[in-house]
Image (tube, rainbow, N blue to C red; front, side):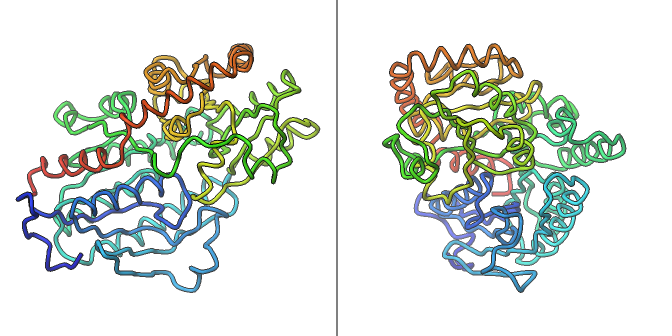
Length: 422
């Protein structure tokens, strides 16, 4: 879309929007949040809007800048719907070094801020967190480019990091909480993924700002992710046969109760437990699983194999540590349901994931960090695998109605228009 079209009327009489987007990842980067914001940008473009994205050079897969993108700190490209500016991400190979990661976030956010100031006035600035530092960047962009700031919260930080013990330094925690409040109070709107996250954020802002917090869930690409044959090529590559597969696919971090999953494997010797993903906890988890013949580790796969990865599992796991159910909504829940597979979630009761599973009828929720409850729930599902497979199939029908990409994009369009700039 050319800049000349901005401000002209669309065929439906509504003004085209000009939107700046600040995000930590964007296609072809492989991070889950990158997939979310990439699809949102394209859906907004389909609605006729112009978008200008500022993001990192692709680096997530190996926590190092990919070979084809090295050599320059900043790269800009023009697209049919606007532009993409990619800046150096300050990647760190040691994901457990929180200080290095924090410095990297600050460095990227500063570069992104400088890159985002060019281009003139916009109708809105959308900034994604984490990293929380992009809230400050978004505010700076808003001051210069004048559009209201929409702060998109994927995970509430630093709550999850504090709850897992990943951050213990009181000075760091206090600084993060200050930045969190600062960003919230300078946002024209805050979008969160669930009612749980809305309650969390509302409790941290002034009474006058609480109406600014809106629930807009993430979506799943139901065209890309479809039910598939369980006997996938991935099984062959990993040496897995026709036996039932219990699958965890996603970030292998300290927020997930994956040590409990590895321990449970000994109770099901005829079942393969596949942990497919990478993250800070993977090395220690592999050491724990050493000698367990029915525990297999797989690596991240490209986006075109996501459906195949999800089809590989007969039962999917969402194991989140106690206290984190309200501060983190695993977006993978929608993807699993889109693949037509049942879910066992070990997560805080009365939070979003158990509500999704109850509404769809496609899963079972047990208390978090309770090995006995986890094994009992998993045994019940494996004993009636055919029945749970049928329920998983019904979950796809539910997600088709609840998490459509066009519907989510329309919600953002309507929110931006309601802010009065458009």
